[in-house]
Length: 347
Image 1 (tube, rainbow, N blue to C red):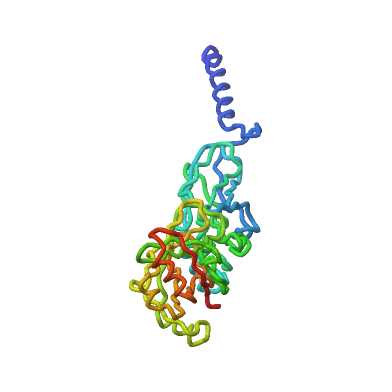
Image 2 (tube, rainbow, N blue to C red):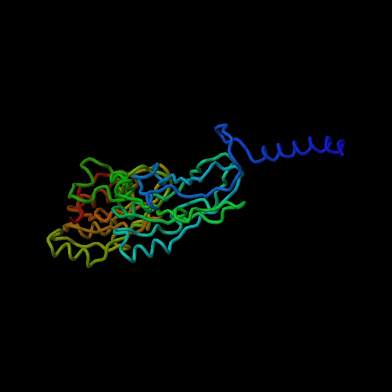
């Protein structure tokens, strides 16, 4: 029996020692921690994170990046994962109850958030990014955008703080965006009456048409390529401008017979200005030698950015077609000519 005790005692001591050591690990600071499950929760102010007040964020020409933090009740002693779920019902319910004034739900497809979080050993907190398309902020400038995120399904026996497992992110667009940086598309000469083209400016012509470039501008930092649709305004709109005195003693031109224009204008990546080619019919100019001519253009749709509704219309007036007629009749084909006139836009 004594021999057996002498044999088992060291094994028992070793087993106890290993058991004690197995219950202790060191965190990233080198401090000994006891193995155990943790509770995960969002860092927030009573369940809300207001951007820009309550968190770090960055704004680029393409997206808003919001940093969100999850914390743990103790240092994590074993790696685990948990999912992140979007809870639209919470936001819709709060908006319906007027608990979120001047707020709209962040549209699906306009943002990205990780579907799961990989929590490593030794962490006390874990940050992740909510990335939001800048266009949705620009389209809703002046309003608050809201999204609710919930932590779910932590693995390996870890739990969630039921009172802090969800966070509502509120984005104040008026404070995040600078109005001068919003990507508006507009006619460069809209908003006032100006003599365009400028005196001395040259334009190309053919035997059948005169080409007048009409400039369009993109405000803000130019990014990738995009296009904007262009069309003629309906005759009733132009007639209203005649009736209210904006236009007087003019002959209204018809698209397709008196002039043509492209259906859209393409911007290359990195460009803030572009010009659409308005082609005036040479025969039409000759037939209206003694008249003042007018047409109206409008920007309608774009596959990127925003159209500035206050500067989306351009009224083109040719005060003296006779000067153009002579140039078109006698100058060789493709010879640049000079045209005078002005462009205007209703206020």
